[in-house]
Length: 178
Image (cartoon, rainbow, N blue to C red; front, side, top):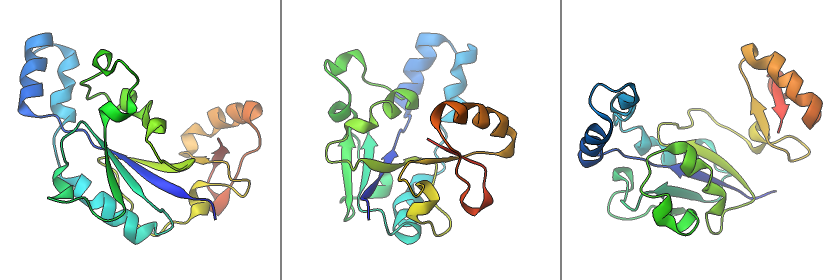
């Protein structure tokens, strides 16, 4: 079977960051939405256990963080989990990019995680698995990634499929072969 890893991005916006953001952009600026988006609901604590329980076919998990050890990891890194810092995945000079709390920028660099399998499942720090999964839920028979979509996106996906190849439909879901 093809090796698959998991990558978890963990971003925690602390009080110092919020204070600096308020000073930089102003309390009433519409860009201050980070206040609403950054509430910690402790969902990250369930990510690694959910992978172990519902995706045992995943070999290793990499937690990508800003250098702080996420609360859910406790005092020691769980077996099969590796902590990776932003400094390890952003290009040089890292000072041009860091610090950042922007998931888009972090996600654009996840492929740089040292030792990461060619295929990986990405989970943000507020996502976790809640039922058994298999390799085939995420990858088609030809080993290409599957992108499942809500039916409202099917016309767009069909248009994209004209450029990228055939559609897949495991479980009857409307999917696009990435």
